[in-house]
Image (cartoon, rainbow, N blue to C red; front, side):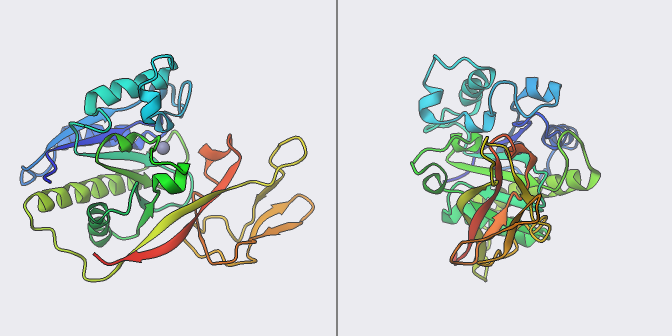
Length: 296
Ligand SMILES: [Zn+2]
């Protein structure tokens, strides 16, 4: 199936200005003239949150795209309405006019350049493997609907399209721009578009080696005190160690009295989004993934 329409989405979270900046760069610089087999559609997803430099106004836009919520007219919060507008613009989900969505995010965690896939389908893996071969330090993180919600639907913006890709760049504080991350996000976006052009022409080479990726297992909450406040911090030996192995018994948290909480998992897992600022309201400390490989 050719990819005819590609949406590049920025500002889904209003305090991540790298995406909106990238949209302006793409508008000014354009894309290589050799990319001629698809149309590119820029979308500024959450303009009100962007203007206020906050993640969202009423609710997280990137959790507002469940099919049942898009059909529910009683949901009238700003992001619920904005989700329906975006669904009209580049969807509708399930029968979208847009074949592929690239949704640009940043993380306060040490996530490097992460490609977030909503399935481990061969096409999505092929795209991610292409980006990985084109750029240094690229990780592939697969979050299936089953692993995330236990169901078959996803609340994420990219789930509108048949192929929805999240691009996550870090570490960077919320609300600021950095030259290096802007360059990284531009290069990764162009690498995705380059793959789409090659795939449309039937000339995208398959990787010769198996592709390693990280499959979402679960989120890990902070230890809480009896009234529900966060009662321990990420242990220094875990901080910034996104995508490094966490062995059974390794330190995860430390309480004020020095008491250490160790991993009670029975296998080696790989933490991601360690100490992500956006997850503090949910009291989530990090997510755990399992490292897998796929041969394409
Ligand atoms: Zn984000």
